Length: 429
Image 1 (tube, one colour):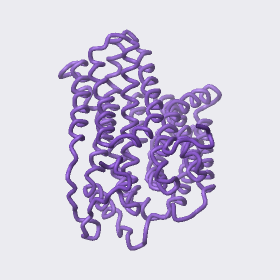
Image 2 (cartoon, rainbow, N blue to C red):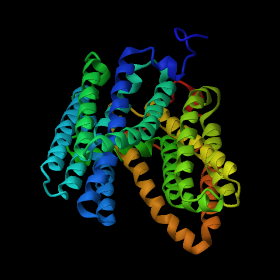
Image 3 (spheres, rainbow, N blue to C red):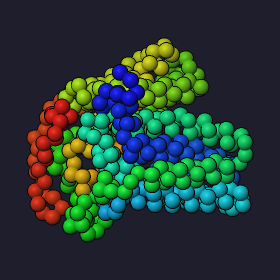
């Protein structure tokens, strides 16, 4: 085994394909910039308002547009050349970051910051559907799981590296410097995408297959998902993991105190979550290639749910760190399995519309989990909330072991959309 001839389906194998390597490189620098800029944005708003409420509003401003406008972004991804669309998304966000830097330097009203942040998120909503829809056309079928694992890995690295670089930039100057650096990352991302030759890999479909209106396009995306029971099953699993992550943002505070880690332990636990996710990306391609997806899905959900239940009674710091890492590994495996199976099962010309619904639903699950956790804690205590969360995830995993029957539904033009056989039965059985 060597770098020139890595096993098929691995992250290293996906990097052999130059077009995908350029796409991944652009995504990597953009992800680092996003997390770098998030820290500077929160700092700018807090320094200008000294209000925790405005910090919360600013954070919501970065998330809500993705949840609300994500379905429309998916429709747009199915309507235009995806390569040019990704470059346009980067270009608009580059300009908005420079405007945000000017707001900081010129001491303009700081409440402009969440407005600009919301606009930047809205401008980027077509980007991820475009990237996900293009990935299966940039790598061969056998390397698709590895490519999705690579994309998940750079996202995890962005969460780790971005805030660290953001902290260094804040020490070196004002938040404006971080905004300028983020604008540069969008420029680099656009150049990376432009380095990929234009061609059919980025063409969404035939003109007659395109939606006539945005809202109709959203309805067509929903129809496509309904037509593929295995897709709905996986999207549901991804939402369950998002709900769990949202609950962890609250419940891990209790775990840190219970395990004797103190307030700093909350950060340690989330670092452990990130380490587990990175480890999970290395296992994903092998798991997808070696087993039937229902078995992998149930096992991955078990790796999320069972440790959550055990955290309710854990008093050892080391055990808590290991258990949280396991939940990260299981959640990233669910994410990669979902992404890969959607790319394989859904019609390429309608992928953006379906993905534009699945991604916001997953992001919305994080917010829902963060709201549910306090309610469960007040009703059942911290231990009860952890056990309830874990039990729900395990129960969904058990339910996924049953294969639903495919029921064709009415498609975009009134035609029946029947699930098609996947060329690799290991991934759809």
